[in-house]
Length: 222
Image (cartoon, helix red, strand yellow):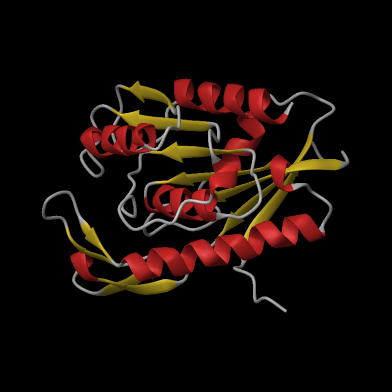
């Protein structure tokens, strides 16, 4: 039996039969509680019962933070030329997300009704996890993130034309917007058609972005 990542789970609206799942990964130094409050800000259709799964990353030493141990999906080795990361750890974290997807399948949710979302580091893992999964998923929401495995990823063709929403802050000093745009362009070279939105914000989430995420969820899951 798989040992699943610990996670915060919310069903919204409460009491509805679950027909879809969203697995949402946090950023560096945070945990699964980071995005859970956003669920109550979403305006999903009343008949739609969604299980939100917010997994906690394990705590590991992070090189760019002087080896300080903190919740992280992978190690960041340096920021030179964008950033250098531990690709093997990204792939391992993606495998752990695959386990969470399989658990949702066992709970009765079809793969085509499972959407992956991620912020910053979490988004980088979501690109790897979603685009390599062997059953067609619902889509990707990539927030203030980048695509560090674009040159190593082995895409599964079942995910061709997968709906993707990319959101980024034009003032982001942590993951600069050029990295978000580079991810968009890398996906377009692989014949994806990601929807790209930017906002006058730093490394965060803003109210306008929540509205756009909500609209994407409704479009994909309704």
